[in-house]
Length: 291
Image (tube, rainbow, N blue to C red; front, side):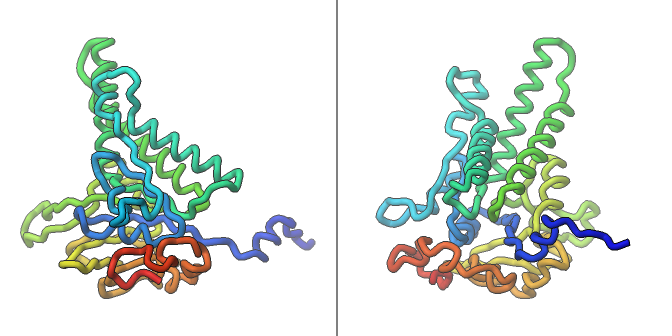
C-alpha cells in the first residue's frame, strides 16, 4: 500500500517558506536596542510613553524616520479610575489585533513589529492586576490575593506573546536589564539578565524566542553579544537552527544585515527598498549599518 501525500503538503514542500524571526534584545537604556531594531525591514515601533524609546526614531529635522506608536499615555489615570482613560493592556491588545487583521487582509505595510519598553509594560500590567485584585478584595472582604495578580500577569504574558508570534512578520521585543548575584555569593559573580516581572516572563518569553541577545554601548559604538557565556551576561538561543548566529565575539553596530547574511534572508534593499537606509541622506547616524 502506497501512502498518498496530501496535495497541500506537497505544495508546502515545494515552495520555500519565509523565515520570520522572534528576537529578544535586552540592555541598559541607550545601549542601541532601538537603533538595531530600526534597521530591520519596514519596522513599526510600539513603545510606552514612559519609556520614550520612540524618540530614537526622530530625524534631526524633527520628522520620524520609521513609524512609531506610543501607548500608555492614560494608564496612570486609568489606575486612578479617571473616566475616559484606557489601560496600556487594552491599547496593546487593540494594536496587535489591528496588525493581525491587516495581515489577514494583506494590507499591512510593516514587515517587522518592534515592541519596545517591554519591561516597563510588564510592570504596568502587574500594577493593573494588583489594583484589580485589591478592588476584588474590597468588594468581598478578606485578605488580598497576591497570587491572583501574578496569575493575571502570567496569563497576559502567554496571550500577548502567542498573539505577537503568530504574526507573519519579524518580531523584536526590547527589554531592560538588571544585575543579580549568585545565590550562594561565593564567586561574587554579577549576572546581567533581562528585566522581566515575576516568574511569568522568565517562564514564557525565553522559550518562545528564537534568540535572546544583549546590547551595550562603549562611547559612540554599539556592541551586540550573541555567544552564550558562563558568567555575565545571560544569553539564550535555539539550536541548531540559528547556530550561524553564534558569533564568539561581540558584533559592532549590529543590524538586520548581520542576520540576513548569516541566515540567508533577503537583503534590506530587496525586501524593503523604501527603508530610510536605502534613501540617500535619510539615515542620519554615522555608523556602518546603513546601505
